[in-house]
Length: 447
Ligand code: FCB
Image 1 (tube, rainbow, N blue to C red):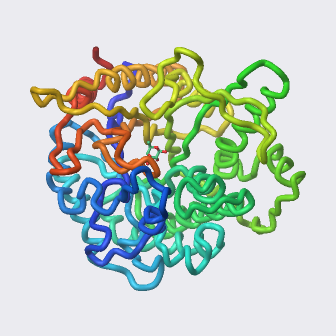
Image 2 (spheres, rainbow, N blue to C red):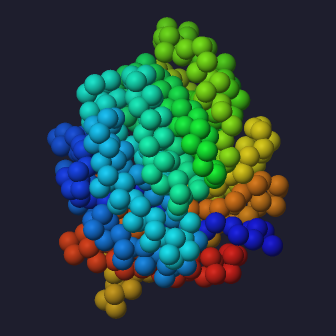
Image 3 (cartoon, rainbow, N blue to C red):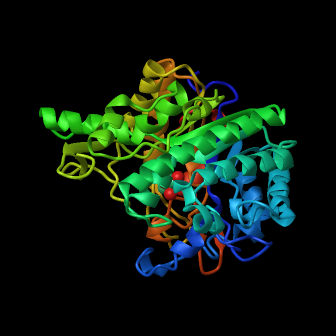
């Protein structure tokens, strides 16, 4: 039996992508509320102001999760709903929303797995401290964590600190594709350190709370393959791995930044004075599990740019998702096996994996998303191979429960198991949802 008993099959979402109600219930402004108003930042000028209106519809949404047979639900808590200014006055109404959501999940035997930070930083912390470029934001994150553990710790026992700090740091502060839209590699490096420090502070706060349960972090991990076997491309792939994967894995799991990447940045004269004595010990505080998000493995070539590498497009004729991402399930297996080989043993959850399409209801109202079923079947099989190879995989969360606001791409990519008509807010489970319910029911991959 490849998937162990009690394997946590679930689905994932995040606050800004589904909640809407950005001005309701005392919520403060987030950097995404601000960023979506920048002309050209988001396709078609779309925003998450309404999104899936989940803030008002969470009861029905949880019922839907029950119908799909989900064993677990990964969602995120909007920091500005809880602390409208990021610190100081707490907003009880915001905490109440998450209490009600969690209670509804528990009534249906669905394990709640909240993430403290999935990118919607309180704008006040951006204004006051430069967001994650400021060390104070890491301190405020630790305090926010302590508050949430105290408020929800009686009913939640699995926590995730950060979602994909690589994306927060490098799309937020280097490419500028995400909020707050900064374009400066040095700023991004500082942001990455403060995100990690914030993670460590939150882990400390969790242990100090005395609540039982588990805490971990979610990293987006990908395999970087050299585009050719030239020495330059092999080195480029190593750098890509260093920049995206090891930059976060090593501090959290080994207590040090990867020396080769530190050398790359130091050689280029990038400052590291933001790393203070004791920080890495905080960042490396023991965690209980690692969350891994996986979408694709990348081909990388040497390039004459700041980082010395670039991604090359998918190979000719290769299947891709609607996002243009190559479909390469073996990367999931290989990355899981690599974690087992190279890092200290730790239970792992796949906290996101899934695919986008543009499937709409047919004349009979059904949504036939065969491509998603194939994608998930192949990735589940890759996870199964990793388990056979000895990886301690404890659960798998499909991204996403329902179609939602896909950041800079707006509502075009549809990642949901459940279709959302954004004009009416009608939810309709796709064919993949029924298929996934059968997988969950049997704890095994089905045709
Ligand atoms: C991940 C994000 C998630 C969603 C998926 C498609 O990087 O964590 O919010 O955007 O990609």
